Length: 319
Image 1 (tube, helix red, strand yellow):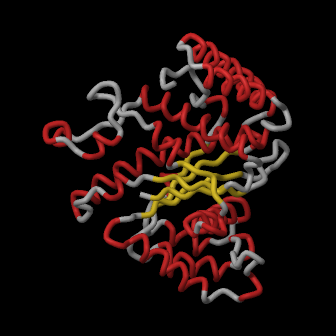
Image 2 (cartoon, one colour; image 1 turned 90 degrees about the vertical axis):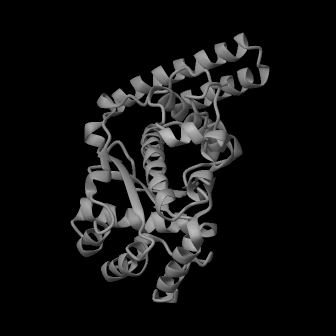
C-alpha cells in the first residue's frame, strides 16, 4: 500500500488557524494503483492550463470550490476508493514554552542513544546521534513550526501504519492473494519543508526511532493463521523473536521525502489536505468535504495536544 503524506497550514505559534498533516492510502493490487493514476490524470485535463506551474504541477491552493468537488467525484471516491488519515493541531492549545520543554526532553533522549551506541561499540551511530542531537537542539533548524511538524508526522505515521495493515489484511482475504499491499508498503512524504540531505537523514531516523518505540509498546497483531502456516509478511519483517516484527528496513528504504511534482500520489494528498484546511478553517469546500466521507468518516481525524502526547522520543534497542 502506498501512503502519501502532505501538510497544509502555516504551523506558526501565533496562528489562530488549524494546521494539518494528511495521509492518503492507495491500493496497489491488480492494477488499481495505475487505475487511480489514470483517474487523476483525467481530472487534471479538466483544469485550466494557467493553473499549472513551470513543473506542470497544480497545487491544491489554486483550485476553486467546484474543482475540488470534481476532484472528489472523479478521483477520490471512484473505485478503488481512497482512505485518508488526518492529524492536526491548534497553536493556542500548544504553547511554545511547552514545545521547548518537550524538545529538551527529546534532545536528552537522543543523548541516551549516543551512549547506547558507544556501549554497543557502534562508532558510526555514536557519531550520527551526536550530530542529530546538535541539529535537533538548534532553535533555527528545529523551531516551533518544524517541531510541531515532526510531532504530527510521527503520530500520523503510527496511525496510518496500523490502518494500512488492517486494510491490507482485509484486501488480501478478498482479492489481494499475492499480499501485494502488505509486501510493498511505502511512505511518500512531500519534502517541501526538508532542506538538505543531512536534514533528510535526521528526519527519517527520528521517524524510524519513534515508530520502533511505538511498535515495541504496541506490537502489531498477526492473524493466528499467519503464525500457523507462515506468511511472507512475517518473513520480510522478522525480528529477533517470532512474536516481534522489525520495521527498520521499511523506514530506512521505503519511507522517503520526495518532490511532489514527480509523485502524483503526494499531489492527491496535497489536494485532499486543502479540502480539510478550507472546511475547518474557513467553512468552505463543504461539498468536497462531504464527498470525502463517502469513503471514510471523520473519525480518522485526530487533534494533537502536546500536553497529552506520548510521542516523545525514547531510548530504543533498535540500533
